Length: 142
Image (cartoon, rainbow, N blue to C red; front, side, top):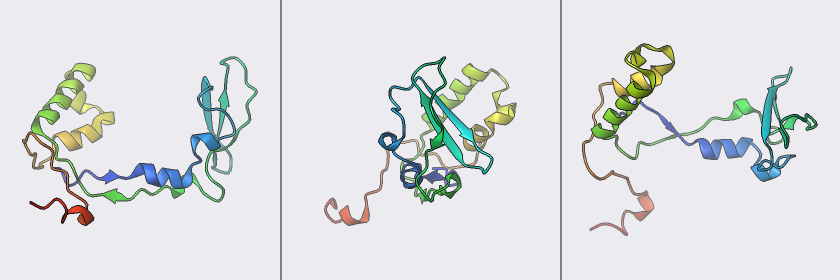
């Protein structure tokens, strides 16, 4: 697997900083338009509108008290599932179909270029190797 591609735990780090959907000052599911704005003091505020033409919602922060968006720092996770050679070829084909012949020359495709054309060991196996947590190793040892 490509060891140089970092995998981060965004879900837990974002939930520590941002309010849950139920804690927002508007009904998220009923909103047809959600507007994010950066204020002068570099805080990000949000509002939700139930109609497209009406602009009556109020902007309020969507982060918890005392937190800032810049305080989101996800921890890096260990690699768990190896990337198969077939998957890499599928991604290359999709990029060629959607972006054409010179997709690898575009600046916005830098991430894909680094991952797809890097010198990494690709396991060509049928089943994914998912490591067990240390507390369960004794129970499943054969």
